[in-house]
Image (cartoon, protein in one colour):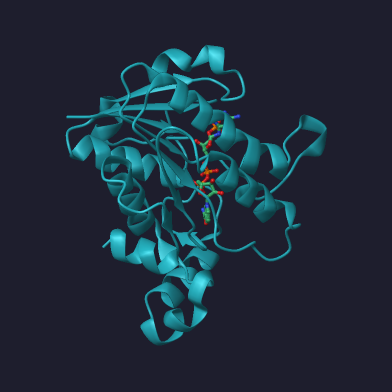
Length: 218
Ligand SMILES: NC(=O)c1ccc[n+]([C@@H]2O[C@H](COP(=O)([O-])OP(=O)(O)OC[C@H]3O[C@@H](n4cnc5c(N)ncnc54)[C@H](OP(=O)(O)O)[C@@H]3O)[C@@H](O)[C@H]2O)c1
């Protein structure tokens, strides 16, 4: 049994990673501002949920004690600049901060959920922040694995409108169409979470693009 901390474990992808890690018998911890999600499933009781803002590491650093791997799944697609919620901070700085904390705590592996493409209509800061974080954490003194998924779909998505989710699922599961989309190919949340979960305990590649995530997350 290993110990995993998911930063953002209550979110769409993060909670699926937590569920898989619990299923495999690992000790699983999560840090997010609201803590435990409102999910009525047995695995939820087996995760140790901490409510904390990752930008205040004093509030959650103790959760890093004895961890083998840290997975970072914090990111935004809409900004609220007056509250400091901007791409540079949430998609970039947050990963750098969490990775430095993981390194300092002696974790073996850090997995970063980056992105392959910028969703339509967003400013470029969405992706430049991700790329800046990728570079900043690449040479830390632990194994770093970066996953770059495109759009991710799944019925448990808290905000994705059901029709959009359905379209993504239809596209993602139709190989003739999906294979032509390359880095924009939609992937099911289960595939992305499996790839992240496996990378946390077996970091044999440093960068997984969409095709690699499909392969690793089978
Ligand atoms: N979903 C996609 O289609 C997609 C595609 C490509 C890449 N990605 C990337 O994958 C990652 C996960 O995406 P997702 O869709 O699962 O996101 P999500 O559902 O919005 O989950 C984000 C998680 O981060 C937590 N969080 C946000 N701000 C925080 C803070 N200041 N301190 C601590 N926790 C905080 C949230 O909980 P609280 O709000 O309670 O804090 C939540 O648990 C992101 O980095 C995203 O950019 C997602």
